[in-house]
Image (cartoon, rainbow, N blue to C red; front, top):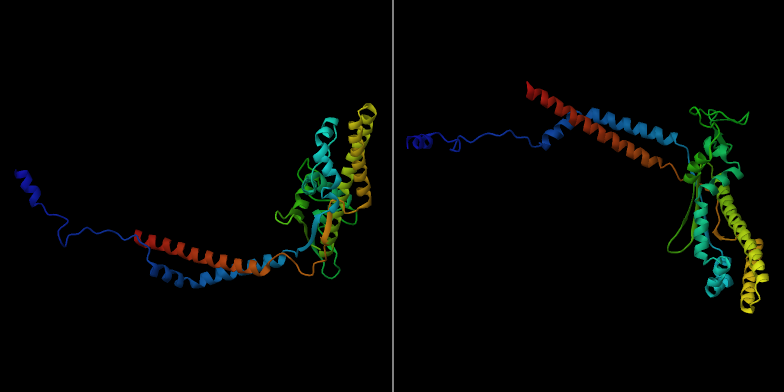
Amino acid sequence: MEKRRSLLSAPSHLEYGHLPTFQDDGIDLLELLSAIWQRKMHILLATTLGSVIALAIAFWLPNVYTSTVMLAPSSDQQGGGLSALASQFGGLASLAGVSLGSTAIDTTAIAIQIGQSRQFAVRFVRDHHLEVPLMAATRMNKKTGKLEIDSDIYNTAEKKWVRKVSEGESVEPTDWELFKVISKIITIEQDKKTGFITVTVDFLSPTIAKQWADWFVDDLNAYMKVRDQIDAKRNINYLKLQLEKTSVTDMQTIFYQLIEEQTKTLMLSEANPEYVFKTLDPAVIAEEKTKPKRALIAVLGTVLGGMLGVLTALIRHAICRRRIAGT
């Protein structure tokens, strides 16, 4: 009982005037603004420095020009007699060991995949001797229009690669290195809605970009043409052998029709240079650069510099505040 009375008579911290005090750890916006204002010169200096660095980078980056070719699947690949035979006699042809193929969409898709492949890209670079401009060019001389070659990578006088590489690596660019670079410069894509194909080339020289775009389309058409010619000749030889072995009239008729269509494929491929892709909008020499966006780089550099300045000011304010609180 006495113990209970002592507890009841003990002073309570909840009585008026004896409320516990808590340290306010909230963010004082006015204090932060004051800290920023006190260090405004430091923020201005950081902003200016960021702007200068961004401008230096923007003007150091070389101009890049874009050349684009708009293509459509060639009318010779739009089905025709071979597709009709594929639907009518495809099963028998498969039994005979002959592939008739399918539609133009398949041919176009195959051509696009080949254009994106490492084998075709490296072959394109090697056939046109693009290794030096691809790997050693730094920028285009605006007065002469010629590419400037980095002498630390390639010696133009001796026509020799002199770049520094790790022990065991090749001084001359490997196929894998060429593919990594060319795949970033030349792209081929198809619009899923329209079916049109776009070949885009980004390079230091507008003239060279246009030339490479033309070469790429020509080489891809030529590659697909040779590929189909080889397949057609092989199919014709095989069908002739099967024709000699069979005495069934219906099978002979089918074989004659298959041989006829394969022969048409050979004739069309030899007569049409735009075998797979027909040019709708040819490449032109660009008059304006595509990259870099110097104004955007300068704005981003200024903003980042200002943000870094404000962040530094707040960090210094927090450090000073802790030191004062510690004393």
